[in-house]
Length: 364
Image (cartoon, rainbow, N blue to C red; front, side, top):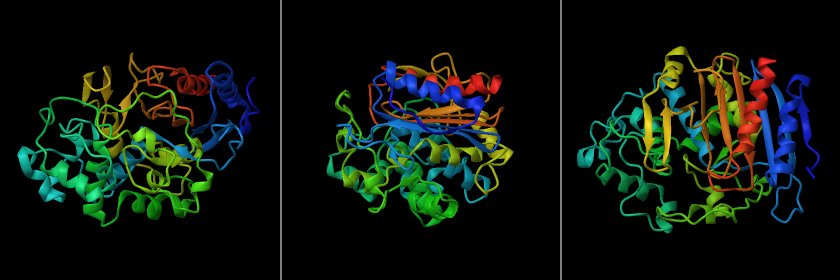
């Protein structure tokens, strides 16, 4: 039996609440939140289930959770905002801001290549040692010295973990702040948004415990999933994979991609949004074994990932099941965040069910 689903939803978006309840009934959900922003209004903000694996702690309004690669949507937003403000250009060579990166034939690798997973550095070679993973400067030094694995700009390969270091170091070089500090100063603290890249100690008691028992061990270096419930992981900054928030906070941030932001900030300009709309890659990904349609920072709805009802729907998802979808045409943002992980090919309907319920509500 599904737990009680708490929170508020406009009558039109009550089917999103029902979709969340179905996830508990049909897909063995543990705890989760779902949120929808439409035309600048938070029209659905619901949650339910448990924030602990043993079921002893309920998922509350202020529960947050590790978002895995859904974090990449926030990282892309930061870079696009800096592009929009003229602080950098996505067409800049990474080495223009990070000179050491030019080594080993990477002088022409651009920020755009990093955003679109075309930088040719989809993994560390040799694989990182576990302790090295937590040393930001060392990880960046290794990437700066590494030769491309695939031809930069020509071949897509999902930069699951490395993208965060590439984008995060560019942000640090151009702003003097880590990406987490920039997000706090410019976005979350001034606008009371409960998203964290590097979670303060005072906030950590609100983090939902992640159930990762069904996940296979990593085969590309440190088993990051095994660290997810540790204070060390939560306090670190991995812009690819350890943003902590809930569906509401991610939807608030991503509303900056629509024409009607719920945040008191100017939304992204058309110059930046045109980058998001552009498809830079449409083809196979050797890392995930799927076909990917990739824009600048965001994937596009496709036959292999049917998350939209038009050509202006973009998305990204996190390991185990979280997802964020933005319909640029309808000014719609839908986010799903949960704490029970399943392998990527299993239980994918949890997030898709919520997304489709929101699309149906808009069409109705």
